[in-house]
Image (cartoon, rainbow, N blue to C red; front, side, top):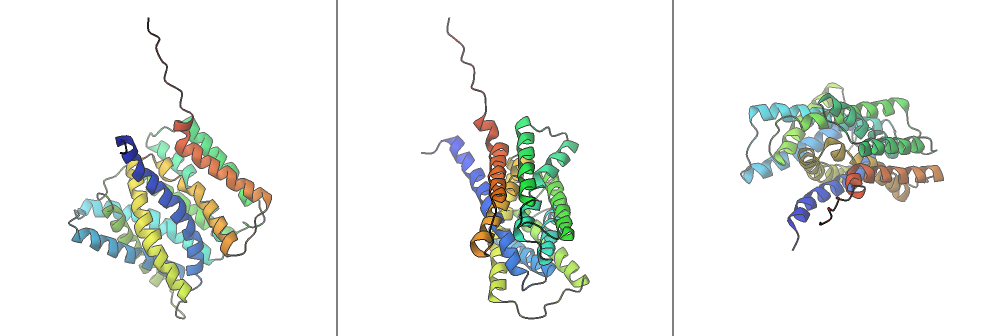
Length: 303
């Protein structure tokens, strides 16, 4: 039988795995989707659909509905993380920023998180700072490679998206949100409505019927990229330090670039493969460093 400690670690490991792999794949899937859908419209449909399905499922199972205060809190987090954070990334990929460079730019989230955390008096360990620095080295290496030269405007949009996501992540761990997965459902409902409103105000329109690939991308983003991953992320925000919850940002570039190599015919030079290794090492240091490098307990001798 599993020990109590193992049972408590399994949900954390599962949530981190979901964010590392599923969210890493969404950059590539968004790239497929925006070839058929206007970016804000696709993001809005994605989150509103996922929010309605998840909210309805939880309500039918008797889950406590959010209070008015919790709706406002969830709405603020949904706008920061999903409407601004993911919305700007989707717009940037529609502006032909490669999915790999998008994932690499989002890897700045833990750095922003550390900065915002200090405003709330959260002290970061030397290992966490070392992991952030190592991750930034990997980002620099990856950005100097031949394949990740993006459009500057799109890159700026993703940088703003990363800052918004990081601030929302820190704020989300400090305010009262609906319990469990209801937090993610409420956030997606608000974010989806806001994104669709902005889509309409900006004049986005479907000029032709989306392709089968476009519908597949939207479905994948609704079920896996939203319902599953957002619930996992909100679980982490309430159970681990913000810098650990956002550590997925170092693994996502690896997954995104590998998908580009495997399915989009992209190639990587030696410097870019080295960057991926550095980024993975940074994740291990940030998330597992205190367990890997902890000092052994001193054993007192018997007299």
